[in-house]
Length: 368
Image 1 (spheres, rainbow, N blue to C red):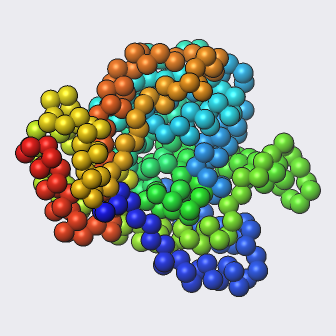
Image 2 (cartoon, rainbow, N blue to C red):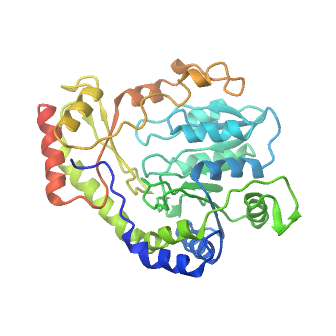
């Protein structure tokens, strides 16, 4: 089987051993070292490490002190953590449809969704490419909205040279499958000194110093062990990203012209880091998306459906008063993409033979 992703963190062995030998394994100097390295990648003054990407989103919203009824506009085509974080923070979720070319929230749809209760715009940078921040950032500024970027899949991505996570408050996931992983972990990035200070207090049970409580906080801390796993990946992020980009280029060249298959685009001005290589299997393809996924699995090609439904199209979210937009038909592009999206392996550990096999197999089963 050619897997959809590979986790290889052996380069972290020396740092992990260093932490173990130190006897101090909770949040400490290794976390600070990781934060400094991450701030350099994100181009921000501050990077605040937390225990996972969902926590990053929750803490970012909590730090803005939204009031009941305040709205956050985000994408209906995303991992459920985006929605869960907004609900956990007590905000009202509003959705705007996506664009088919970048899988991200459509600025025109955002403009139509803004109300007098809207306080936050939360674009999701999906699959490794940013949303259209050239339109979204000015739109947010025009309406006085805070920007929280769900950059879970976009570490190292950029829009016109500006890194993801630097347009407002950036929230990153370091889960096991991400381009940079600490097994579990997350990061919040910002240039705002006051906000960074508030987040550091919030993640530490509301303490600025031991037993000096300033707010009702949480335990959102990252451990030094987790930080040690991530540091070597940040040091070679350019190399890892270049390998993903080369693999994506090879896939695009090899799959071009396959009937019924729409290939992912790198849009002008954007640096794509290829967390996933996601194709759209159109209605005129020889096989449906689900049939293609099954055929590839049977032939030893790992693949993934990210994501099979619009994010709130599940019984547990129905009739939730914090999700007033829960009508699937209101988001036709997101619904169409959810029915057609299929991700193929693009990780940096693929061999030339693996890439050839992926291309040949996809073309064969689709009758190319």
